[in-house]
Image 1 (cartoon, rainbow, N blue to C red):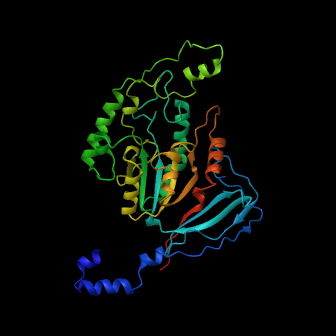
Image 2: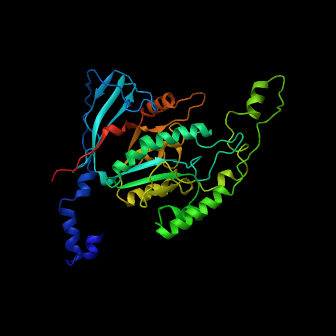
Image 3: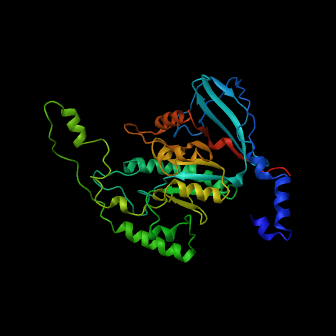
Length: 357
C-alpha cells in the first residue's frame, strides 16, 4: 500500500489504523438492501424518441419507476435508465448516480471505412462494416451527428474515452493511437498517419465478381443455392488480405490524443485490467453494430456487464439493417431485446452536474 511506503509511523501502527479507521473502500464494497418497489408511471412518454431517424421510439405504456441502482457518494453524472421485464409486465425505469471520473465511454467498432482514409469497400461485391458503401455513409452521418457531439460533451468529465477495433496493436496503429501500454507523441503519430495512408491506398480493392453459375441438386436445391451464394460472404468477394489491413478509427469522430484504442485480439481480460487500473467502475457503451459487435466482441456488453455497471446508450448505436433503407427498426428491436438483461439509457438522460461540496 502506498500509505505504508510513505508513512513515517511504524508498520504495525499503520496496519492497526487501517483496520480500525473508517475506510472508503470498505464502505463502497458493503452490500445494501435494495427495495424493489415498482411505482406506476402515469402517461409516460416514448423512450429513445430524440433521434427517430436512427432508432424507432419505444412506445410501451406499461411502465414502472424503481429506486436507483447505482448510488455513488459525491455523484456528478446522473444516468436515468430502463430495462424490460416480462415478469413485471413492463418497462422498469430508475435514476442512477455515478461518479464521472469512475466512468468510461466506450465506442465499439468505429471503423474508418469509405471515409477518405483509404480503407474502402472492395468492388464490385465486397462487404465491410454495414456491408455496402451506401449504408456505411449513412452510419457515418449518425456518428457525426449523434455520437461525436456526445463524446465532445463528456470528454474531460468522464475518466476515459475508448474505441474498440478488430485485430492486434500492429506497428502502424501503435504509432497512431494511444493503447493500453503506449501513448505516442506528435511526431510518432505523424509518422504513423503517413504509414497508414501508404498502406491503405496501396491495396488493391478489386475483388471477385458475383458467382455466375451454381450447381444445384435435385433434392435440396435451396440449401445448395444458399451454400454457394450466401447473403453475406465477407471473404470471397473482398480480395485476399483485406482483413489484415490496419483498420483506422473513423474520421467521423473527433479523436483526442488521450483517447484509447482497444484491440479485440488482445482479449477482454486486458481491457478489464486496464479499466480497473484506471479506477473505472461504470461504462456508457456506444457504437456499432447493435446486433453483433456491440454485444459480442471484446468491448461488447456481454463482456463488460460481468464486471462493470454498464449502460447501453440506445440512441448512440445502430444495428445492421438488411433489406431496409433505415436502421431505426432493427436498432430499436435489438436494444429492446438487450434490455431483458441490460440497462438502457439515452443521451438526453445522461446529465453532468458537479457534486456539491
